[in-house]
Length: 298
Length: 310
Image (cartoon, rainbow over all chains, first blue to last red; front, side, top):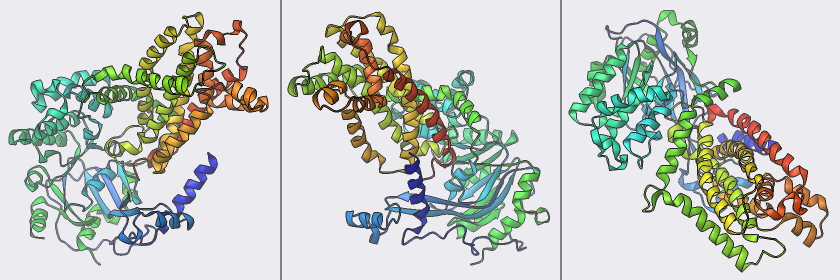
């Protein structure tokens, strides 16, 4: 076992040497990424932000993903190439690294509701996962007050099971105790508005019903820092109102909310600050109106 | 390439007299998001997640057969059909039954005990790599997943064990006081399986090819564990190898648990019938349970913060 582990770590150590590497090493200084403070007075902090205690500090954060089975054309996985790589000890085949977040820094404060906008693949979801502590930083650091939680209980739920079982499973997955689950159960059912469908498997739900149940489950727990990824995109008008209401409640209970959504209206209505990510870097950060206007133009 | 907007963010972030962000974090007592808890803390966190682990295991078992017409009946049918095939294959066609009293009971016991460990290991290898979305979405001690997979297999075992006991009685064995030892063996085997599942889960999370390799490993393991032959008879009796070779083979955890279970279930194996299983089988059973459990948790915990990365 010991030899095996050692060998593994050796192989690991060589991974960055994969030819055709697209990612610059993090320990190599990235002059184009880390920009030093430069008093250019674009976008000022909104006035209604309580500049109290910071809740999340993101310090020059880099996140690098490993992706498998996405080799470029010249190193596609035929047997000869794979063997050559093995013989030359060039590490794992068909593996590429994706530099998803490249040097992001910001500070959020109590009561902030921060919208994160950007195109597909600009690193929004990755940034959220890193804040939640679910993706280890490649370089830099995330400092948080308490444990930020991602509003993403979806992955724990099973489509074949009834809504009832999924509510219990989801609540436990978020770390509730049995008494908390019993206490919250009815509230979740009521909030989601799925009524008697709770006895049916989730695979029979419409996409809107599924989204409502998921949002109801994951927002049942109280969070200090809540990270929401596209949860409000689905659901009918009435439910969207309800969820916006709930996000406001969470904000008022001294928390910080991060919201990723493609629907800019939702962000404009709920957030007091917007961060615009572009290709893994912050392109703009400030008042929702200004940032969204610039985002719509660019 | 200059990025004035990013600079603005930086200026705002470190606004107060350009204080470095790390210092600011320290001043307000903010902690790094990723940190591995100390081992005792980790074990306690795991215990606090016991409801999740149990519910997750049960849910997986329920959802597994939810699309089939016979539903949960498959929990009983699967081991029954397996038993029928093993018996047809090894008992009737290959004729492995020479020299062994009550070969059906001998074979089925070996097969059911081995299958429990084999399935746990196979499931464990996928427990991290197959749940990346869950790991990337929620916080919980990652050992919950391999543990839940082992418990799922334990729940299945409870049913197949019932099937096994019925079949053994049908083949002419009668319940004795020795049967009271069955839970002890299963407990020890479960502890071993938990440990093995944890080790294989960590290996599977970083070695993508393990899942392709595993069927061959478990099959070799199956042949080496004396599931359809008696290690003692084949190695010493038929192949004329020295006794220590057989002894070493009995130290294999799967072989030990199978041997002990046969001692319990099959009458011709009982001490009063002149069969004395080597003492080291029992020692081996206990040793593997304790060692695998301890090492497994420690080994899995060492990589806790890295799961979900690749």
